[in-house]
Image 1 (tube, rainbow, N blue to C red):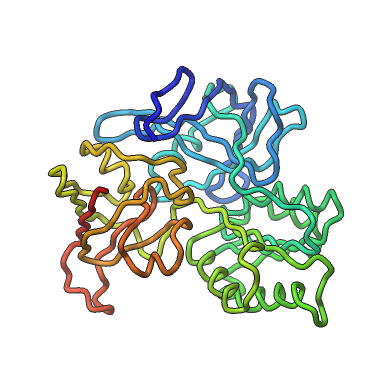
Image 2: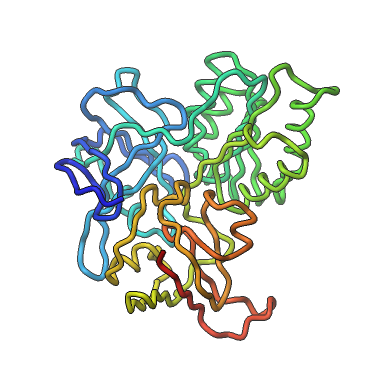
Length: 359
């Protein structure tokens, strides 16, 4: 979408524009190992609903110097009058700069952010809600848990983390939900049993023992491996697709980020995509004029046909169906990547290369 940038809007050519407003950091503190909570104060507006996110203008360093970019972060909580919104951000070694920027913020800093945006709405009326968070995905579900608990809804929250020190908001959620908050720590309990969880959901959604009036719904936010396991298990049990909802942060995949070459022969483009750069960013810097919007692998606006690939496509989106991803004929360039095929899977040690085809 190539709408011209508006005053007070963010998004370079090719992106949809979202109006931003001045805001001030009024609180900045760590809430878990590597997770920083930042509270923004801004002009009054509509309060964020559960599942909402906001866009924050971040300043990141790159080959061409410091530049403005936009990142989307879930709203963990917000004031009733709409003047304060809290986000929490994990700083990772593969941060593309947004995490480092947020972790550098202190109380009193001036920033720019959008009003709350909704892409992960909570539907009321289910008999039971299963919330499933992997790691920092908990930030998209905290507000849902609070909202459902306040309404007296039947809600269970499974929070999966690698180490206990990374469990942001664990104490708050345990106090809120009691034994309905189930913290799973991989280092202590081993791998999370997705199958057992889905069996529990299926029982609640069925007609037999354990069924609840109104059936069950699930809301999942976390790494792509967790979401893919839930989605596959959901389909295998014949559960309704409409009652499984995802939110992704588009930063995790099946393979560790690695450099690869990307080409678009129609416009004579050939560029290298670094491990800390998205394919979309690399193509734009090389001169490609592409459409995109969410940068999270959800809207599909950046989907491009794949002509050939040396290596393996690492789909990190939730827009393409599993069948479309397995076909390997297109990809969402805002989050998905290419990786060299591992030797164990027949790789020949050649670096990965991707050839794209414009419509």
